[in-house]
Image (tube, rainbow, N blue to C red; front, top):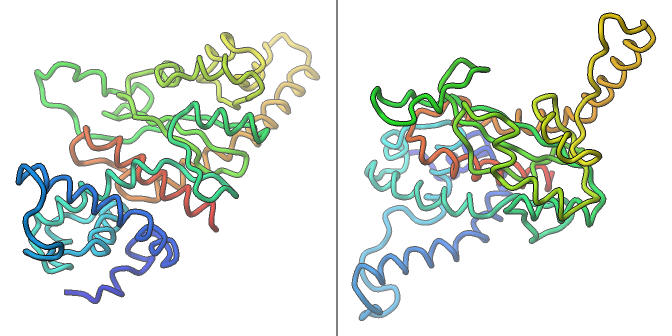
Length: 304
């Protein structure tokens, strides 16, 4: 069993010691509440013994958090983590399920606003309008295992762009590439603009008229529906267009790409966590995993 100090190093967890300490302070209370709620339900009422009596956790909260971070960062198998922490695989599995859910519920951090976190797309639009921020939105795909033959909805995960079975995440970032929000994920076959519409981007545009969102050519439908707010690159010139028109449009597209590139940087930050490179677990748990990682990445970009 390795030293707990070694396992808590940033090389294993992907977060600094200061960041880890803040996560411990933030999540210890909610985790204890979840544990007590589960115990209350199991015994069917209030506890009958003194607080602190009974069996002790073989894996304390800090170790559970560290094990979850190592799993998210390196996709280490639960059995291997059990060997590192000296507990059974099932204990690690239960710990990851608990902590991952708490991390996902945190939402994304807001620059220079300690304690304020964005959890919905409406939160992001309200924040952008209040602060005068131009948003960037894009989608990324995570490869998942192919659903078994004969199961309904199997083709929904086949991405024409990737030519793989994928799930699609829509991500919003600011002008510095800081993650502000990610959605619940959709099957890879769904169009990027359709995924954004299903998350409620239309009502957000209508309620927050001053917010502009930079998009790529995959969102031309949003530009049509919300002109002046959904901003896509200028269309390419026709072959019969004069050379000066072609050059002007090319320069305009380059300027748009240079401003929108920050959301690509945000997506690259997410893919540094191995679980988002290729997902090999149950597809049902990928959305909560993605939101947990996005929240951790937003913390780091905000604090450092």
